[in-house]
Length: 84
Image 1 (cartoon, rainbow, N blue to C red):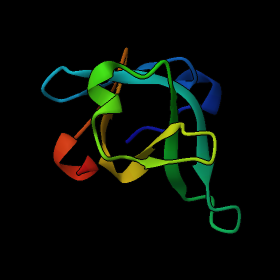
Image 2: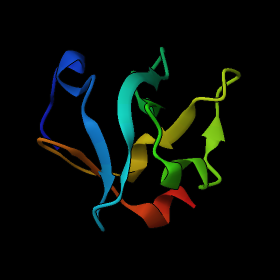
Image 3: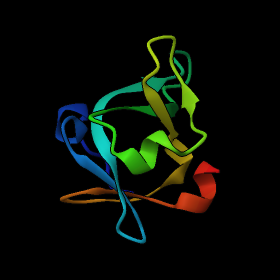
């Protein structure tokens, strides 16, 4: 995957490869030592996302594992199988 500046990901819509909208990128968590990206934190969750059993932050924000990301363009596309 091409390198993208963090700011380019903020505010992007996240969708599954089937086209279901999950929410908007609020933030990204990473391992400080290695720089490895761990989770995308979502805001503006859809009803669909609320029903997925995603890991949550203390503030109940949904976390998408970064390794589920397939593509980054106008949207961030994730593999739904990797979320479950």
